[in-house]
Image (tube, rainbow, N blue to C red):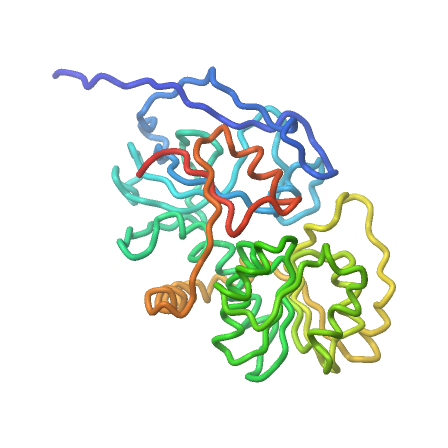
Length: 349
C-alpha cells in the first residue's frame, strides 16, 4: 500500500521569556522561528491539529505571566508557547468528534499550528457570511459573554437606571453599554482618548462619554454626568475610577468587578479611600468570571447574534496582521492603544 507523504512545515511561535508581575513589556516575549511540525495528528493520541486563523489579546492573560499558582488559571511556563483564545481550522484529526475543515473556537497556542489535546470549553462554529469569523473571539466569544453575563446576572438592571462603564470602548465595555441602552438605561462610558469618546457617543449610542485623562477630578466628572447618582457601575479598570464611583453610587447600587487593568502591579494592592460607602449606601460589589455562567452561553449567542443581524448593536475590532505583532498588540492593551477588541490575524481564512 502506498503511504501518504507527511508534510513538515515551519511553525512560528510566541513564547514567554520570563515571569513579570508588573506591566507587560514586549521583551517579556520571544518570537521563535526554529520549530518544525508535522501536519498530522499522532495516531492513537485522540488529538487534532489546527491551523490558527485568529488569536485574541485579552487582559486576563497578564495574570498568567507571573509566578502565582493561586488563581483560577495556572501561570504560563517560561520558554513555552503563550496560550489564549483563538479561532482555528482543523487540518488533521485523530479525534472522531473533530474533522478536517471544522472551524473551532477555544484555547490554543500563540503559534501558526497547534496540536489540541483538551477539548473542554472548545466549541465548533459555523461560519456565517453576515458575521465575521473573528467575532467569535469578541462579540460572540469570551469578552461578549463576559459583558452579557455580567450585565444581566451580576448587575440585575432595571429599565430607567443609570449605568457607568469604564474602559467603555474595549472588548467588553462596548457591548455592556449597548446592552444597557437596549434595556432602557441611561449609559455613560469612560475612555482614554478623544477618538474613543467620539466612538462611544456617535457610533455606539452611549448617552455620554468622557476622557478620564482630561478630568483632573473624577468625582466631579461623575457628578456632572450622574447628578442623581449611579445605579450600576460595570468596572473594567479599578483604581481611581472605582474609588470615585463609590462616592457617587446610589443606595442599593451594584458594582460588577470585571477587570483591574489600571493596576501597574498585581502584587501591590491599591489603597481605596471611599469603601465606607459600601455600608452607608448598601452597595453590592461582586467579582465574577464568565465561566460561572456557562449555562447561559447558548442563549447569549442567540440573543447577541440576533441583535447584531438586526443592526441593534455594532462591534469594533482592532485587527493586527501577523503572529509577530502579537506581543506589541497585547502590551498595548494596558496603555489603551487598541480601539475596540484586539485581535491578531495569523492566517487568511
